[in-house]
Length: 283
Image (cartoon, rainbow, N blue to C red; front, side, top):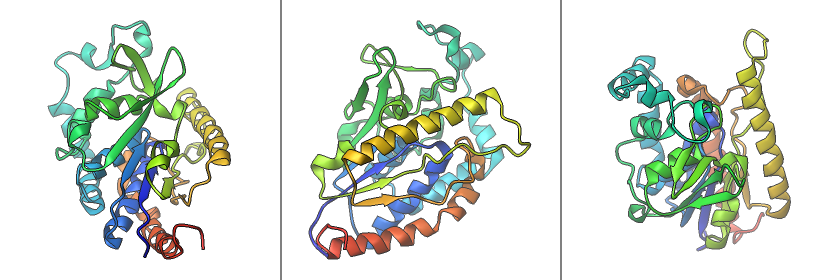
């Protein structure tokens, strides 16, 4: 193999992003360490775990232990619940009652304890994408509190409340940069981009509810943004895990999502090995 460096852009997509784990495992098994990571939403979670020294296999075991057990999820909600319900659902900011769950509380409750709490502690250059609500501008988060940054990057409007960060009100990075390839492009020779957005899925009963329509519209918007960005920056290795049958909030289907996307690991190993042997260009 050549000495080409590797960067990974982990895309947003809710529970579908559990398949990011297979990309991590592929690099682990090849003995390769990326020099730069970026992520949006669930991709930010994958990036901060990897940059904290958590292996793909370790993250897979953790996610199966937590989300593979409905009782464990409920137990964590119960143990870490706010003292008052108002602390969970209300947020005294200009958006008023529009806000819902607190993403910072979710990050504290469900991120692995081994995740470093400050960007300066991470072993790999890492950044997340978030969106400034009142301007629509992207905010690149690469310093300070990692937990708060992950929370801001995954603050999906209508599901999570916005995150106040340095005087700005931030929401999900998928609104502007669902797969932040441009964050890692200047720092690596080979860019692996992992697309887990998917498209809206039919519900089991065939009924389309308002909440699901909102999620579906967001997915379509992110797909449009991503396609346009890829027109201007074609990556060396674009990964599409097999996660099309799952919806963004299917975290309790962790085992099924991982099983459906398991072939991602061998696919990435094969394609990345070919790239490295070809000197970083598609053979």
